[in-house]
Length: 542
Ligand code: CFM
Image 1 (tube, helix red, strand yellow):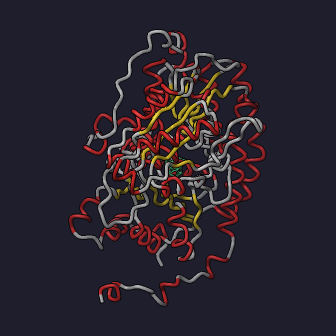
Image 2 (image 1 turned 90 degrees about the vertical axis):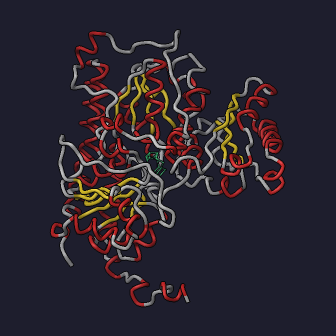
Image 3 (image 1 turned 180 degrees about the vertical axis):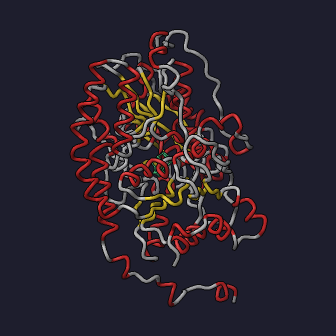
């Protein structure tokens, strides 16, 4: 077998599409890119956020998953009702490992429940609004929530139930309870990315801005796009507290309704997952004047850099000193763990395919271990997540994206407040980037492969060609990859591990990866299909 360095990426790119009919291959070729240039230079264009070709087994999810599961799911006290057949509710129930920490026994936490209207044939034929109203009544009777979100599944759009009208009616009947619906039918858009946008819009119009009381404390920051998978947000909370930064709200890991409703009173929005929440950052800036910039708390160096940027934004000596102290204190343990793990991991290779931002963020941690990412891609990100936000004006808006409402946002006459004075702007200068995301590609080495919307067939080609030391993806990929004798780390759920964000998270990650790479068990695995393929095309056709 060839060593990774000897494999020509153009050969791999060709092999990936070899089995396809010509037209399919032509389309896929635009989503399979060789990262030709390094940092600061122009990166090649990648086709992204387009429909998956029918017949291809994609790794993507649906719009409902992006809205209900991803953006709103980690909020514990917005009662969430899935309007649809029970399967959609059941399969979106506690599968994402987003954790939460209620303040006490009396603090409402609806996350352990799966609430669904359990739509049946009768509702499909005669409409489901009545049953939805009944479900809302029942939920109010039992739980007395302050807010209820209704999430539409595919049949809701097909039969024309108006969840927004139901929400309005029920709100009138129950003043004081904020009830809002999401048109996040699974088929909207080409992936879960559309659901993120739907969720951002509704949270912005119906929740943010309702409570004008700010949180007490200095340096009030909202973190956007951190969902507390495996306890990541807990670790970031710990670091913020230690540094003296007031975390106003997290959208939406370990969050509560009131924090969303008063988020417009904060000084700054920092964006962790650009893909899922850049819309909200943009809209909050326009309406309330809150500036935003991109941060990354995955990787010890990246965490330190992000903290320094927050301190730089405020320009306050006390905060800067605090941040430096925290970094110094934390990096000692991190460095020792890194060195130890790197002594065994350095030089090994990783391939990463995750949703819309982790395939980029986790390259940091592998780099810290001295490992090389040879191929990476997102399931559903857009061109800006690959190439950087500078390409946004040139992104072609197709019918699928046009399906999702683009809100017209204007300045709030009372609440808009410029957070930065002229002096601040001068102090920060042009090098201090706001509204920034450079994307994944400029950060990757030359001649690495960047693949959008990878599918199972291509995953197998990649494995056979590169035999990476570790493959990072999700549960749908995990067992196939392991049967090839290659360890797979789930970067959606972290398997059973985490947190991986922040300083303590980095230590956990080094340890877990080291363990996975060091075990000899993988060399003993023999793919079952090598000896006895259960199903071949010949059998299937006979
Ligand atoms: Fe953002 Fe996420 Fe991701 Fe995402 Fe997701 Fe996720 Fe993800 Mo799974 S919000 S884009 S829709 S970082 S659930 S916490 S891991 S695909 S890379």
